[in-house]
Each structure stands twice: as C-alpha cells, then as structure tokens.
Image (cartoon, rainbow, N blue to C red; front, side, top):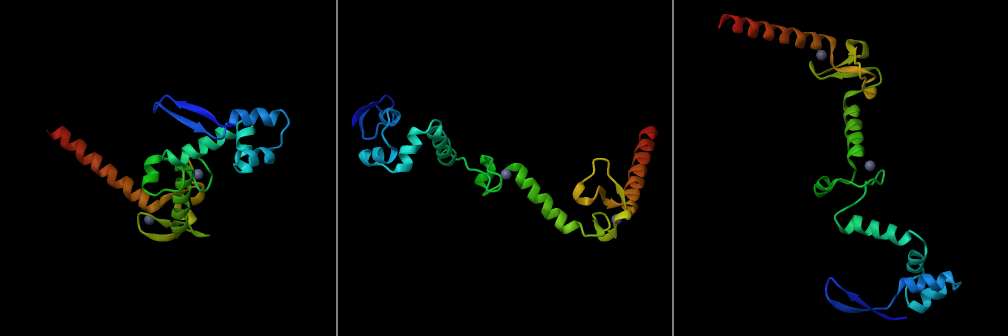
Length: 170
Ligand SMILES: [Zn+2]
Ligand SMILES: [Zn+2]
C-alpha cells in the first residue's frame, strides 16, 4: 500500500503512504469506506473525499481559495476580491454595496420623510421629485428636495450664461 512517488518539480522521491487511486479501486471493487480508512490510517472523511467523484477537486478548490489568498463572502459565499480582502473585507463586492446602501438608507430614510442632501433636513416625501431610475430604498425620490434641485438648476443656468457671455466678449 505504500508506493514511491517521484516529484519532477523538486526532483525528489517521496513515499506516499496513502494512494488514493488504489483506494478508489478498492472502494469500487466493494471494500467499505471505514475499513479502508482504518487500513490506510486516515480519517473516514478523508477516504470519502477521495472516493466520491468530484469531491477531491471540490476540497482542493476550497483549500486553494483559502491558501492562495482567496476567501469567500461571509454572506453569500461568492469569492471576495483579493485587494478588498487585504483591507479586511469579508463581503463580496455586491454584498458590500448592499450593506452600504442599507446603511445609507438607515440614515436618510424614515417612514414618512426623507433626508435632503442639499438643505440638510428631513422633509415629507412629496417635497422630493421622482427619479426615473428610481432608488427603491428612497421610494423613487431624489436625494435633494425640489427647492434644492431648482436652486442648483438656477445656479447652473447662471453660470452657463455668465460663461457664454464671457466667451462672446473675448
Ligand atoms: Zn456576497
Ligand atoms: Zn432641500
């Protein structure tokens, strides 16, 4: 049951105590998993990793995802971004975005009023214009109230006018 394994990478010979191809063969020919585990001196779960099709690859991929710098989102299980993870992120990018939006909604949305980003106060829903690509968490309303939006528009127009005139005067 021991066999010599030659590693071309390190040009060394290893004695592999646990030959999983042999274990697979023996399992297929009818020997029981726990009996094989006992004989090879490995855990029963290790035997099942080896004899279940695809299971070894799955375990390997999981280990790679951890040891090769990978990890999974603690919320949905998707792989997280490596750069973000170095900064301590435990969530994938979409989950992190959801979390940010939820935090923002928490601070700027109440049952019957919304926070205006322009005049920095709470106002009832109808003080805000409806957005085309509605932000559902803001009930489809703008970040700024109608007055603030109008003021900003007026400012933009003034600036454009002033700049346009400056150009013609040159
Ligand atoms: Zn996620
Ligand atoms: Zn406002």
